[in-house]
Image (tube, rainbow, N blue to C red; front, side):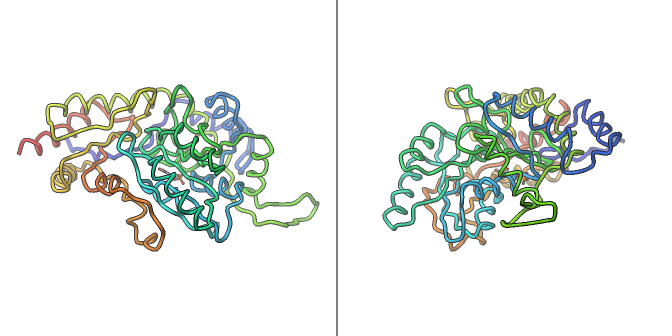
Amino acid sequence: MLTKTKIYLSSPHMGTSEQKYVSEAFDTNWIAPLGPHVDGFENDIKSYLGGKKEVAVLSSGTASIHMALKLLGVTRGDEVLCQSFTFSASANPILYQGASPIFIDSERDTWNMCPELLEIAIKDRIEKHKKPKAIIAVHLYGMPYKANEINAIANKYDIPVVEDSAEALGSTYFGKTCGMLSDMGIISFNGNKIITTSGGGALVVKTKELKEKAVFYATQARDNAAHYEHSSIGYNYRMSNVLAGIGRGQMEVLDDRVRARRQNFEFYKKHLSEFKDITFLEEPDNFFSNRWITCIETPSFELREKIRLELLKDDIESRPLWKPMHMQPIFKDNLHFSNGISEDLFQRGLCLPSGSNLTQDDLSRILNNITKTLKL
Ligand SMILES: *Cc1c(COP(=O)(O)O)cnc(C)c1O
């Protein structure tokens, strides 16, 4: 009898060159958080983003957000506006800096930060003499946020935007690659993302000086001296040369991975469109999503759970949408500006398996479980 294998939400998918780059690192003994692959990977990302921005590869996307806030001078007592509908790693670095997050709810078109609520929040904070130090907006599940609207408001009040592009490498917005739409961008190469170095991230900035400053802080903030001299707090956040080798191989297949993930989305949409209860998030004009994760909206929490549990019985991983930060116990005392949208999506939405390595058999098996539940 054939035993069925577990189907994951999003699992790593190696190409053909990763091992070659890793072997090169071993052969030349570059097993450190510096080396030729670190430089090479940074250059690969830089060219992917169009060549005009500077890239520092770091140990994680979370570390990259932390360094972005550090470069922007976010410090104890400051307030930072952050998209509520996201993974906690978007917000935690605000706490690392001793600052307070204020959460902004989503709009329906993209599920991302609502520009109107953002402006309401900024006006409120300025009135109370607490002008926010930064804005963290997120391209959730690969769908770009409304960058033109968000940037216009940010510029009006002169507040920098950190673009959390952890889930959106390969997405574009009016032809521009996500990760370079705002003042500072971050990318994640965690194991579940569209490409992975097992763990890793990148910070995208506008100038060489900013990049050098980020690398300085990320490598223990050692001042220029023969001995170890320190006049600021340092971090151990640089990416290892071995992992950067994996990243170089993964960059070669990024476009294929985007294509495969978008095909998953098309497959689910095609076969589930007969069920009026199930809806998908469509791309507004000029928005191109990498479809990192295909998400569905169901009419109720109960049906969402029925589908999720049916999949689980067949060893298929699916997951409710992100629980908004303003509903998380750790942020219960933080201010939020909400409209009910992310809370509603959290109740009714489900992430379907979306790996670029899903086979046609996997997809059919997932689909059968969903349609079986819907026909009950
Ligand atoms: C994964 C993720 C991060 C954090 O990236 P890591 O590399 O896992 O630290 C941040 N924000 C969002 C939206 C993410 O999905």
